Image (cartoon, rainbow, N blue to C red; front, side, top):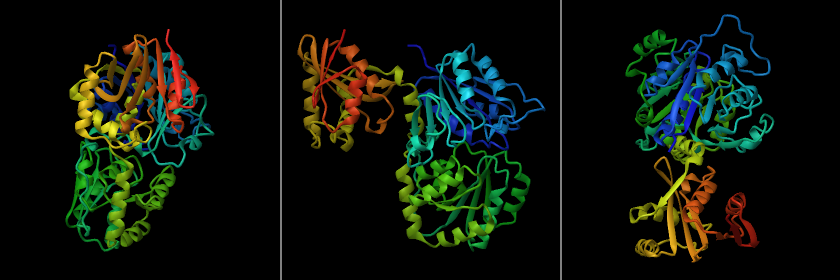
Length: 501
């Protein structure tokens, strides 16, 4: 099978930070795990982004030419100065860097380009475009928009900016976290704050980590503190000096991932960027500090949900006031930990990758080795709620049923896979040589990715019925849309039929 080829266009700089590269790498790792090829395209804007990418094992990176001295920002794009080159130049250079690669997808993680970039690269390469974003401040025209920040309605959030038809994967469920977070040790709550972790971003050009240290002292916290930073931080000399003056305070540089760091402290203080979702996944009480305008929406919304505390200003007095209230309040910190963990499960990058690779879904015959995962998916409350038989399954009965199905020549049972990852189950019960009733269900963790039509069509191709019947609960609008999309006709309130050629 031909491997799907994905290109990722992303930069890092003192203005941009390193968070865009980090989340793009998380998506790249998930894509690679599922069998896709990944090529990065980046430009050195003062931080060696190519080295950051290579450090995570991605050697196929195209480095674009350095920016020229003269550059006039585009007034239609608020962050255009982040690119350091005109949009048209970036389109031409990106397309040239990918011409031989012929990508199926190009994923852009930048606020510096608008719909003209999407359309230009799509036209030049004949590919689909994914945009990783969270700032609706310019026109965008991707095929897929990934925004892992919290919003009540992502479609409404981007309503004034989307051009053409765009699919949106929105919310912390799609948090682009590294693979370590899915199985990482979660924070074990303690009534007392024994130590505090501080991570203010990969660059922290404003030296906010030192401000947080001052705020901790003002709030009366005398315990251990660990600050995490990277070599890209322009304030390392001053930060080291500040750390040296405070007892029981350490500075950790360039950690490969932050999962263990987040889990080992009883309170985290951090900037409201992409690491927010990592802290939520680990379930550690967090004080978010707003250090950039785009964080002024997400941080208050998360605070309103009870998932974080937040300081609206990155000043010593504002942070200290929040710390003074939070440090002695064990009940509040416990509630923050529990609520934050509900938002993020660490599977977001895999979900996004599966959505991008949905067209590669294939089916294979089920075996008895699939019994456990089929049981777990079918017995999940979300699956039972839309099934004709909604009662809980019993294991021995399930195993006996599976044995009967596998032994029956009039029934065909398949599991759907993407890159070796099992994603769903589909069954055909034949009433005659060329007519069958179909039923299917997905891994409940993968709902909303658009996998259903691919599973249904792949199953039909494998089973070869001429006529396919389906029973769908009248209340199950999602399944009704699925069968309609795949060419089924509704012949009764709960019955759908398809005649295959």
